[in-house]
Length: 449
Ligand code: SAH
Image (cartoon, rainbow, N blue to C red; front, side, top):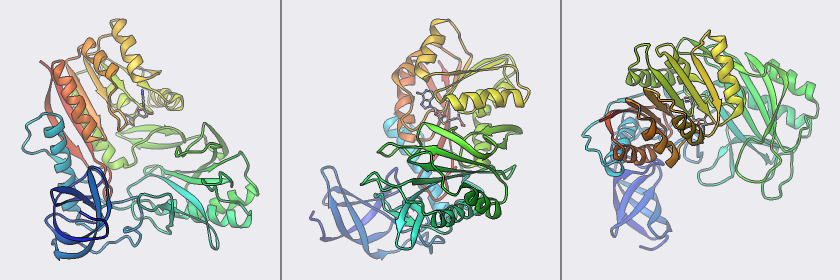
């Protein structure tokens, strides 16, 4: 296979990033904007060691699932992958991805798996991080072009609520008048790096946080009045200072410039504080369903002791607390644990305790102290469980483990490791929290044999 040459190939599957997989001379070629069962003339754009990349030159066989993209930026913007497909086929691709991971990596033997699609593909995302760059006529904000750090300026992002776009427009108008410079990562100069917006769907509160290289807001009053004029529900304005090079968006210090130190949302009938650094599921409506599934799998009757590892602001923990004897939540980010404690108090929940610690270390310590939960819930980041968490779970030997996962591959790897320690997969279910994007959530119930 040669770069820039054209080959004929069919789509045989999809990668976890949502790229189509085609085969040329027995080698996998990853193709953006592909649809199931289509056939193409492909131009090879890159030949790597294990796989190649290509782009569609001509569609020789067109899928009836291919649609006109609603989002005009979709082809360039690296934010979403599936605007060119019907949502039905997108959920099928996601379901297949979870099935393949659980069977191939996890050693399971599943024929099918339930998937809960999202009720809407639009305006569902309550959090946005827009990178800022210098444009020809002032600063621009948008999202990175696929595979680059080049900003595609975006006026309206359909997966975000309109208040997010309005907040960005207000910040850019301020930047122009206040002569604020955009951060340039190649020269490591400039002030404004990202515009971070959060929206609480139920209370309609909005938080706008400017990520800057130094704690400096020129013409602050102008910024505040532009935001107040243009963003209904504005509840909090913050700055986060990130002086470092590298890809981490947020720095260590956050300061409230105006309004509240956190916004509040309602989830599963409980009220949650969300401060700038705390994790909060980006799709509230689907998160409620996700937590209901996790709760159902935990099967609590008011007598159980429960451990919730990777608890964030205590969202799952507090839902569990209502049906358990007691719950312990463990989380690495101190601000999230502070939120979790306040959330427990705010909701009148007295049987939940929270610890700020690494999940592995906390689990090991609890196991040594003979703290033996009946049920353990885990909801780790994409890299999955660390070896010491798996060890500690085996040592604590709960009756059930509920695994909430945002990465089917690491979930599958961990299921195999937990199976080796006597935990059998009883149920797996996928839920789509990220329509138009390649991510997918899975909830699994494992039982001790
Ligand atoms: N269950 C929560 C949060 C899930 S996201 C919810 O649904 O809202 C995963 C969380 O794990 C994040 O809050 C992250 O800060 C936390 N985390 C990441 N690494 C961790 C570690 N090593 N130990 C404990 N928590 C960790």
